[in-house]
Image 1 (tube, rainbow, N blue to C red):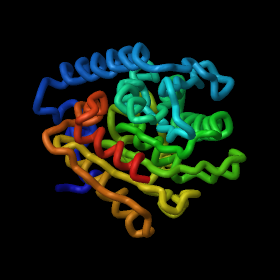
Image 2: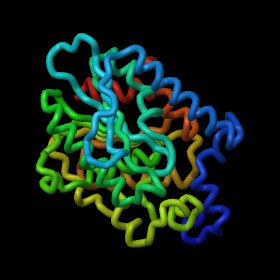
Image 3: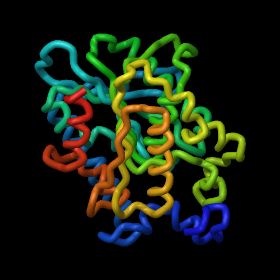
Length: 293
């Protein structure tokens, strides 16, 4: 396969158009179905579990999070922070609580965070907001037994950038025990040459500054046993597979506790939708990462 820099624009754009690779539905249908599944799943979670909604973690209008809690917690709970995808320009926390019910049933609290998507937000701001939301959670909810990050697609990119954070700048030292990255993007340079960048308006400098693959040496978890899982859908594009594999290999060379998995018979969308279901393979992987820590 040609290097991305040698691809014609049309070829490169297809590589970074996840909906084109679904075998289940047309490009438009799979996106519409994804919105319905995640939005309805979030509403279901809100009806089933105890919630703290629209908790501000900053001063901007979009800097809020929702927390989903077990009704009768027994001692300190693990807390999962979920960061939504949507190519940094779609979705919100209103579609980000769909996995809460199965996790809360296992005694895991979930926080779904918002950040300012493009064009209102730019890449530096979004990365900063995710970092500040994590710092807020650490300060506000210090009684939790450990922090876990989960991100999908653009959310996996933002979670990976959180791993490459100098937390002394935020006055905290998060005990991040696990990170679960699903169908993520870890090098933003190819994005600058696609339609995705029309709203983001990233320069090459901005893309390099916010690419996890450019900041591997800065990944130094406070918890030396932090478990990192890089996951990709079988029917993600070859470029998504390449990026996931390269990020995994980069962290592996650092000697970190990292694993790589491909989820069979899934595409970029239903791979994460599986977290709605307690017995789904991805849910089991996530529960193993959290409960076996």
